[in-house]
Amino acid sequence: MSNQEAKLNQYAQQILGQVRTVISGKEPVLLWVLTAILARGHILMEDIPGVGKTTMAVAFSKVLGLSCNRVQFTPDVLPSDITGYSIPDPATGKLSFQPGAVLCNLFLADELNRATSRTQSALLEAMEEGQVTVDGVRHKIPHPFTVIATQNPTGAAGTQLLPDSQMDRFALRLSLGYPRMKDELTMVLDRREGDPMDKLTPVLTTQELSDLQDLVAATYLQEQVANYVVSLVDATRHNDYILRGASPRATLSIVSLAKATARLQGRDYVVPRDVQMVFSQAISHRILLSPKAEGSGKPVGEILKDILAAVPAPGLR
Image (cartoon, rainbow, N blue to C red; front, top):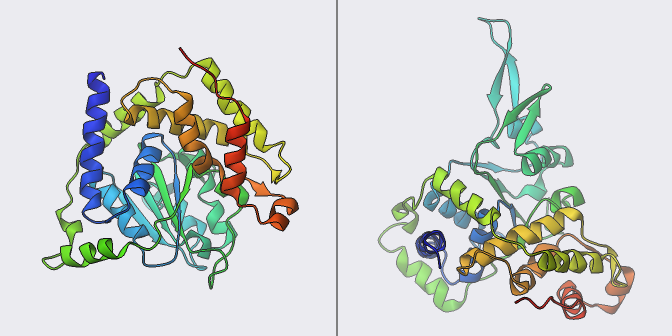
């Protein structure tokens, strides 16, 4: 393991160690969130209210030293609240840009699926291109930049489906779920002497996080592994149980997540196992099941597992 990998793993342990003091018993989910951030991906947290989605996002912003803005999405939130707006400057007579909430390092979109489609779409350019366009002028969003959005389960009161174009921009869809009894007890006991959130401290600077993201992006990807990723995604487009397969954006997302996974395991190159680990997590929210799948009751996880079994992994030296 090189000094760079050792440093990344040291940071990862410190980050996760602090966040665990706030979110008990959810280590796999916390690791997925950190993986997505290192891969410059966005995260969608889908769960019932009150299980700690927002708390987790705020905890990560604190330990990562990121500027964080939060918007509680409701039907009356406007696109300009997200992107910003221009007002005339009396001194110069020119338009002056007033930044919106999304111009930060970590944007927490709370209960995103309660907003109108018009407001939801205000995030699309920001998530894909790291910028917003207001009155024909582009404004760059600070780097690093991550969106952590939460949504209540589909069908909950006051919610609507997120558009497919937005779902495709999330690297991962995760769920915390209810804690185990012992973890819930730990949560209660840890708060007898104050809120653990108040004790969180930054582990690294935004520049150091950006450097780690550059390190992840530079992870070596052998052509055989790249072909393996493409073959897996292509298989989602030719499956009887899938009406609409994954997009090329999903292919790139799998590669980025696999690179982050490799680095977290102390390697500077991707192996097929890295791809297999992230495939279902990165794909499940991006595909549309066919009537055959709906009729048979076959879950999406089983369908993707079958694809992994059917597509041969390359043998690397």
